[in-house]
Length: 130
Image (cartoon, rainbow, N blue to C red):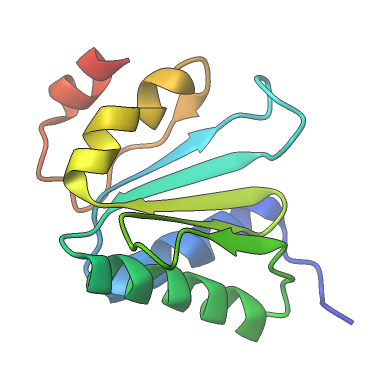
């Protein structure tokens, strides 16, 4: 039976798994006051389809190793945008053009944003996207 990590511990585990494989522009958004579907969204940029898939796989592997259940993954075939759903934390790993086009930060702009990690974009620009 999967053990229950706290939501914050799960979010930190997802971020660490992304950092392990050099994801860029990692941002976590607390959406508890915006939706009941999940608590956190973690968005990260990967430079290639191979890296996108590797990052998503690492996130899923680390969560499973910690005893968490993966509800589902989407997008592994193309590698442009891979989603890993672990229930209360959902990770989106995207190539730069896809991330810019879909602009999830704008979609979830009512959430509370953590400080960006491994960011190649100035914080002011991330905030101006919202």
